[in-house]
Amino acid sequence: MSDEKKGYERKPLEEMNVIDDFLFEEIMSDRELGEKACRIILSCVLKRNIEKIRFVAQRAVPGVTESSHGICLDTYVEETEGGDDGSVINVFDIEPDKQSDKKKSLPKRSRYYADLIDTQILKTGADYEGLPELITIFILSYDPFGENAMYYEAESILKTHPQVPYNDGVRRIFLYVKGKLPERAEKEDRHIQNLLRYINESREENVTDENTRDLDQIVKQTKANPNIGVRYMKSWERDRMLREEGRKEGREEGQREERANTEAERRRADMAEARVKELEALLKTADA
Image (cartoon, rainbow, N blue to C red; front, side, top):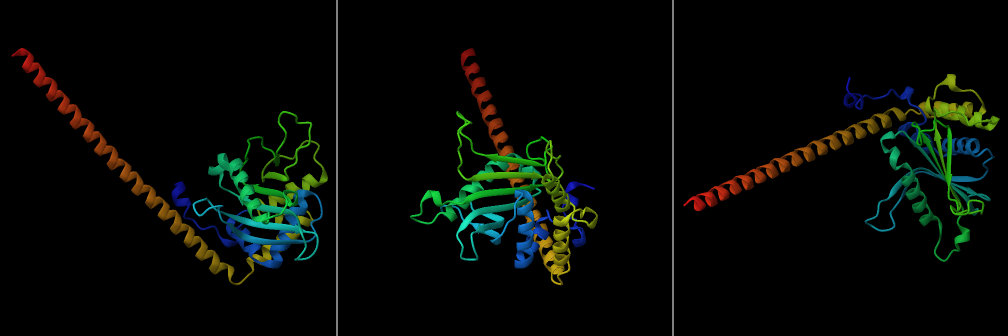
């Protein structure tokens, strides 16, 4: 079966994994379950307790101008010092990603995400020191940098003097769900590996510790929602129509290019024929 036909196949809802866009979005759209899932992921990845948070699923962030490219964050999380009105001390962006065809653009995409998020955080007249730490966490089905590692982290350094601290408050964490543990792995690293395995394959046999057990309960509750089946059908049909529309536009563009190429070839042939006739006329004139 061709990849094109496979693209139209609908994965059964019971086989959906946390890394799949639909299931992740469904979990995060529930205020209680989404908050629990955020705590599990952040606490495990950052290796510390996450206390007070507020989050927004599928948060749209506009570009800085009307013509600029906007983004949609899968999950935008703020860690606060107190309750809902507490000041923000850390901001997190959690992005599951299975789009391996966009692997090359991942570093610049993470840069653009961070820049646009910052434009939303800093209020008019506020001091730059007030910017909270921003941590973007990409959970990837593909190896982003080819080292087969579970955990990659990037941050800015003072390149000419790396020994000098340079903290702009931005961290980028890339987690490869099938990557190897780091050398001298700690217990917390194994917890991250367990979590990633479950996120990638959300089955009961991959429940191996407290984090995966709690996340498995969230997945089961989400899939048990009586309305999720209808939403899944609508979502799949919408995506199928978008894919088909994209293929249609691609075919039409290809046909336009083919027609343009044919027309260009015809013009070149006409020009060549005209030049031959011109040369023939010059030769006849010379012979005369």
